[in-house]
Image (cartoon, rainbow, N blue to C red; front, top):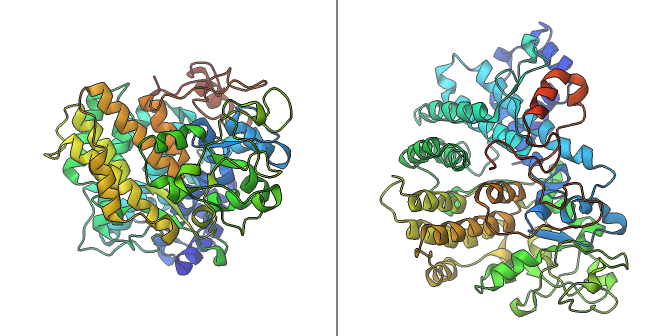
Length: 534
């Protein structure tokens, strides 16, 4: 891992830290290192690291989607008022900055992957790293377009060709291109050729695992289209299933932090920040959902802090993870002493010593505060849930029943927690027994879709992949979430449906930016919907 992160530093130093002008110089100046003298494989790790930074921590997701999807909640007062973005849809001092970070990091990820594709396009021995880079490019660009809507794609990543004001492609066209590119790249993986080097996923460049990851990504891209292009969604879901998706928890895609080398888990870094550690809790929506079925993940992920403010603010102290005692914090409350003070919330459990929020469950210290913890990208459980939905829809995704896909997913979702370490580990026998006791409701298509997508939300949220939990909620409508209506909110009392474009786009690419804004349902605002979000 440490060696791989050294490669990241080299890749980032060589390419990412520069602006567009620097990027152009690196690709045209004969005094710079030529591609033939540099192992472009190492850009793969840079692409992976920029992507994971975009979907974690203070770069957006924990400050937006974690609360929009009601996975986390916070009283957001005092030093931690930046959580007002997620819990109450109220702007903080840096809302616009946070909103633009996914755009920047997503393109940095895609740009590094594009360098691999460009440099090795004619080298048959590099087919596997080119295919992996194409998968990463699609992963990064799906993240970007899902956050914002129309974005540069066909003319993006071409500063070396002096295209510095790329057009914003329609999201429908971007999705069509992503599926086509994935299809072509996945067919080219070749186990007889060298493996990709510097792979930060737990695959070590294994071509078979990369292919499965790519087909699971294809499945996820395809399923995003169920409201807008059902025929294409079915076509590519069936193609992904035929290609072979992730087949076990051991094939989950994640990236571990390496804090000793300066590459920490940004989710853990955020949650261990003193104000966050004290005020950020699991949402009542999530804990109530899990406790309703005696889900064993409750005791694995949640705890009540030690009594009193001093103990609750100490990140070195563990809490009480007894199942019966766990209680989620309702979204939309504060500690400001007025009508929206948490002490006025229905069902308020009272203080814990002098701590007014001490009887609400926080993310468990032994699980989520390790700066070397895994940061999840895509899992076997998610893939199986999407296959379960495809099967419910009557699509030809293999002989396995929807109920079996669902059972596989439920068990896997519990077992994936083992990547966080012993404290979070749920034994396979326990996971399988829970899945067997809570089978898919097949009484109707609507009942099945509700159950599948609620489980998708819980599974991705617990693994702290907040963006994906929110994306699939927008697509499926599940779970049914009640918006927070808090004074001064920026989304008209609605759960936000997108992020704002970076403020710089209006000045550096004004004409194309205006065109993109014009295609949004209500302009460049949080309540506008992207193309596939009907």
